[in-house]
Length: 413
Image (cartoon, rainbow, N blue to C red; front, side):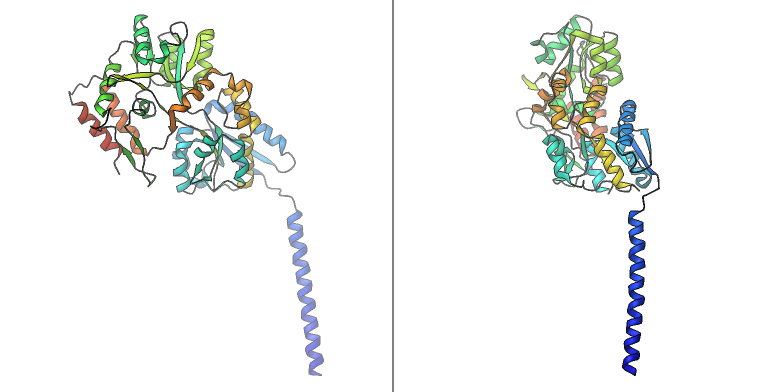
């Protein structure tokens, strides 16, 4: 009798358990099949100048995925060069998708703002190798390449310069002075000043800690010493055909015909070409005279990237939107609307892109460029150094002392 009771209880408990499992499975199945009725809210940060472009791209994304979710996508202007600072102020409230300059990648990864890209091989194969490298940390892809044009080159007005003239910065300054004009270069930014040190054997870069810098710009040894570059810069600053000015000053000078050549980036190509028309010219950077020899100017190469916030509440949709913004079709649209060079292989090899003088100049300059990997202490000491050179060194401090002070600031912990 006891055995029968035990058997009956066992069957009863099993039935209850099976019933519970069936209800649980049914409930789980219902939840899986139930469409997500919540609105997918996404915020996109991009350059202010890209508003019209990104509006078109976002509209296309919503049409492509219509019916799969309800979207509320907000574009907000945010400087790509300042993106990291804005994001780090409050990661959890930051943009879901954001455009940023590649030199911010390491810090964003270290802060946990970015996670490895899922299925990276397709993106590695579809983009230029250098762009993939710029979007990676230790061979792991953390963002999607967007452009391959965040560098600088020489703009020149063909009315004043021949192809032979543009090989020498010294020659260009002389020609500009003869016409009462200027050749421009921005010395308030170490980004451009690097071009004068890059091919001299004097070095600067990021230490293994990813924060501090090494720098030998004050070296007293080697074929070209730090003071040789400083003396060349002093001569350049005092030349009547030279002017140091920022982006706005460069464009203003081009439009009012006071600047007839300048070192600047591709983002101003459309405006410069509209002003100079058939006289518009672009080429790799020239050489300049230093320590009695011609030294080829180098450049930092840069890439714009698209990142997905690791704290996004809709990370999968944010990742899809980032992929959409960076795909081949929309990189071609970016070139057509903004003149920016694609990182996508197919887009970059298109006839339209290859025929762009500005993009061709960047490609020519690529042989003399390197990725910008610099810690934050680089910028201010360089600006202070160049400002003193431009002012004619009013305190009379020796060039070596000024170089030593600059390097001390650059390499500070």
